[in-house]
Image (tube, rainbow, N blue to C red; front, side):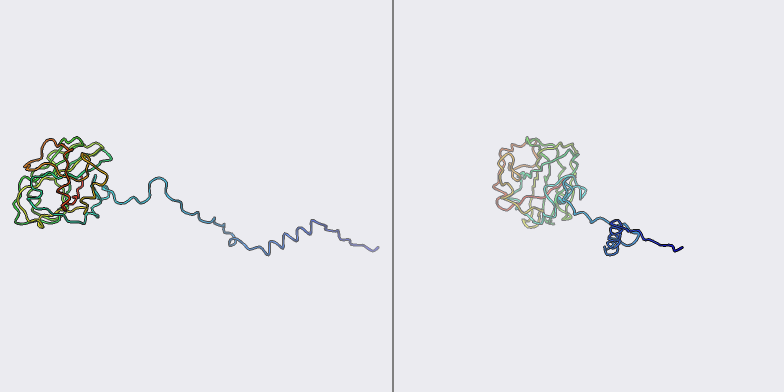
Length: 237
């Protein structure tokens, strides 16, 4: 007996299988064999929580507050003893947080070894003109080391957020370009948009040998600073 072998017709299923096999052979492999493909890196997003660059802060230099970045206090300002002796020079400082105020940093740019200084003080006044603290006579510290130096208050105090005025009083005799202070370079323009009693830089009174208990800030004057007595740099610790 003869045996007949028959082949079944594969039909559409076989054709589809062939096409899939062909596609598998010609499609590029997205990753090496056995390796998982990595998603494309996401584009960086801009910070929305204030964590971006905001410039130097006092805390970056172990300070609590300052009138400005000391890196910008490159100007040297000088005045004659006749020009500022006995005057109270005021620089406004706005605190944003509560601090314990112990010292005032002053940028001393130059000294006059032949100067005769006495009754020189730094102090702090509140927005109502009340003296809150002051140093002892700093005349000796103004005769040595032309650097930024902390001058301690006689009694530290707690300063709440608000407006304060750092007061400088100089007395004695010195060479105009010998005793010099670091400043921002801003004189007249520092008070743009401001009027007494809120001037950022001003002088009050004459003939003072000590810092008075109270100042009338409505009497703030710019006549002396307009002659080139540029706004001094101060910091707080």
